[in-house]
Image (cartoon, rainbow, N blue to C red):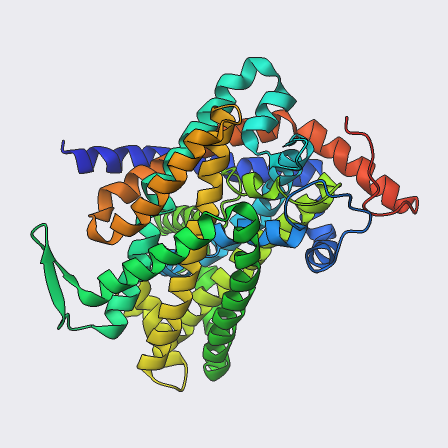
Length: 478
């Protein structure tokens, strides 16, 4: 067995049925224990996301909205465009149903992990914050579980620098730019025995420059940048998909029929219904989790920096992020693909979504390709920024606040972004995917172990609101 085959086998085990059952099962358990809070308080979550928390006293480095955008920057990305296309092509239209199902239970998992991150974070005398699953494990579960906390931090740091946050993302940007500006590869150069387009090199230099400019400024600058880019690009992409759906409105009912029929194997050949259901379920849930990262423990590391006094409030804000990421954006991508028949063209990955936008909008294929290139580029760029935060926070925990290793990591991270387009990404992607999946295990253990704390914090918060106390009232932490 070759190294690539070995990695693929490990990846299949890590992201196999047991992991998906654990992720979805945790969400179902929390949904029952908290009385479907993610649906009952959906409107309040949206209100909190857009509103300013009263009574905050500087307990954080960035605003709640900026913390939300930093977390969203790492989730809204290639998974919403390429991941959805892959799920629909491989798993069939029914994968969209299971993707939404995973998001519905993932919302409460994201709520719980972000609540715990704010509750158990550390804030030093200078106002610098540090939090995430590692501190939730250590402070919430006890010192004897420190080894589990360190394991999570180690895996998160590696996942960031070894592909998820750097190499894979910059490759997505440079590939999109090269495909648009030089589709026939007319302008190329050779390096290390491989041929690259000039557009690839130019894009690599430009992106690396801006990444360095933002990353060196730390989380405050990243928070500022993502708070502008993430909403803007999300709106652009949503509008583009809505145009496709409006122009193909007559095909929407048929698309929903395909989704539900595919989700429950109604159109599978005789004897193959169960296999069709399992394939749709696996691809839909896996791509949904990959897109919104609910349960992986990544977002809490950014959320812990929020200027908030209320763990519950921040948890609600970030649970709404799953709704935006998967139930809105991923669904729009999937429906655009189905109404245009792009999943039946034999194309793969981003090419499927490009076909959907190009043929679905009345502006032509070139406009669709341009819109997707811009969205992919900015989505991937913000993902690079978000995963830098995750890696840095993990190292800061591992080295007990010593910023020396963090600064070295930051430099290596920028270098990885620059050399990414000139590396073979298949093995790097698989390795990073494995680390990313393994992160979920310590985090989900923590969420389940501290589910009683989550329930108590939730009851306390809403009791105070029901009794007319100010939202944002600071109180002594348990």
